[in-house]
Amino acid sequence: MTRVLPPRAPLETERLRLREWVLDDIPLLQAALNENVGHLDPWVPWARPEGALPDQAAGLIDRWRREAARNETLNYAIFDTDTTLIGGIGVYDRIGPGAIEIGYWIRRPFTGAGFATEATWGLVDHVRRHVRSCQLEMHVHPRNSGSRRIPEKLGFTKDVRRSKSDLEIYILPFTE
Image (cartoon, rainbow, N blue to C red):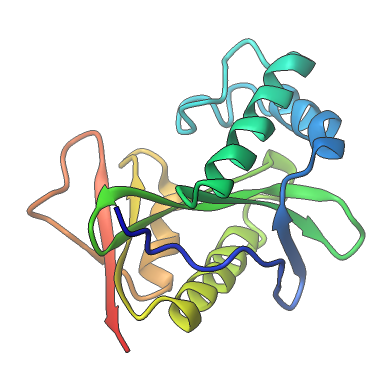
């Protein structure tokens, strides 16, 4: 199967640095998951309502690194310029031929500041510069009002045919 993901590379936006997760990030990821219990677990499938132990955070980072090596996903940690972990974002080749899904999460103290929109735009720009033709998708729970605004701000349109009561699908097709 031919993968359509962009190349692995660190990215920068005006306020953020996006880079692949490394094993040194295990304590940061664990702390972020534990401080955001109740904030992330309704929306993020791998966030646990009971928080994360070090081996669980290590397992996530290890899985993301293996999937990146196989060109299945590209997961980034989102940092501000002061090396504070803001959240995570990724692109996933799991929809089907010619489509990439984008997903993101932001730690509760940093929501509402436009970080998810800025990080998503940086990743969309990276995909557009390196992937010839593709449809980008964002899958958002209808009750996740903060996340629902992001695809609309970035020019994605809701695919009403495929959206369901428990999942809204936003698309951004492009060709070079």
